[in-house]
Image (cartoon, rainbow, N blue to C red; front, top):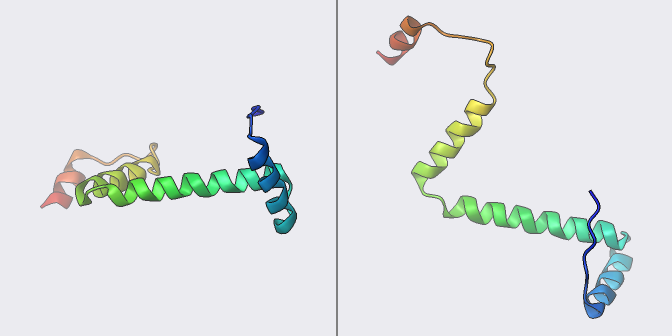
Length: 82
């Protein structure tokens, strides 16, 4: 996906200098910076969740990995719950 973003000239100059030091293109440097920022925000959000919310999120993630073609009978579920 291509997006045009206006960047202040002073920031662009700094990006060019940093990209030279990092040995990356300005585009690659910006992508790396955005990726780090997004990961940081995700971690911040996870850290702010309560224990119950973390458990709910973990359960949701596990449920998304389930093979939906397999089924379990009602009796097997109640047997496990005993």
